[in-house]
Image (cartoon, rainbow, N blue to C red; front, top):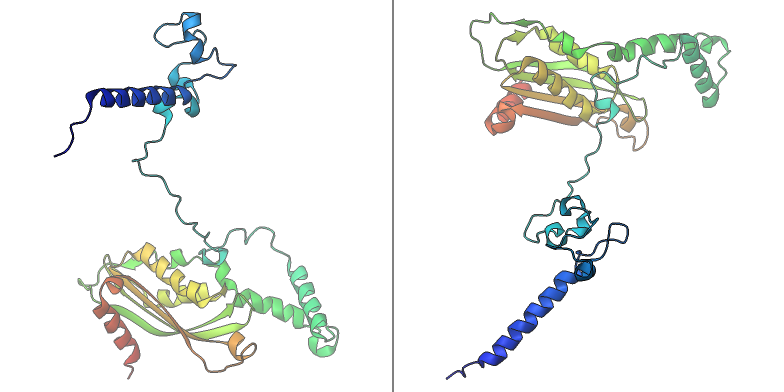
Length: 292
């Protein structure tokens, strides 16, 4: 048998607990600062009623620390946890990088820079074979990096809607491209393969090749270039699915560094139906690889 608790003892414990709770509440943030008005323990002497002191700020206007229990955080409420930092989009990932038209050096400045590089390499830019090299390099750069002056979005604006209800896959494969690694400004080249499922019509086949050239004729990484091609097709044509594959050899790996020639790098981007259905990816890869 359990002993019946003494009612007097329980009453005493409850009274002590209530006294402790009152003391804790008074010791929280019910006190006002000296500049805001008299302290709460001066209520009786000042004759304040309803716990409101003369000159004291309303509870809603006090700082969080002065609101007592109302200003305390509910421990059961979820705590906002800051999300992971998101890296900014690199300038190379923009379709048309900002500020390329501002602060651009003159043709003469570009040629002078080439002469500096020739001297740094250990040669004489004034000898007969190199005398016209700075002008040739500046002219070549205008073509090799002409993609900065082209708008990939505009290339896809004209769509042929009268295609007799065709909605199956459209694949353009083996599009050759030549680009330059943005890390060493050394060429990388290869083939691009693009497929999409049209919705509102099809685009001229040559336009897809021009989109590849637009992004290839910039300082690039192969990964960024693959995503850029998929992005512009997705945003302009709104197809049911997009598949882009680039395979290339990088001379920055063949001519310098590890110096391994013949190594091929493959990058892919799948959107929509191609991303959601593995069978569509297999179909795309099969069509790319099964060449006559």
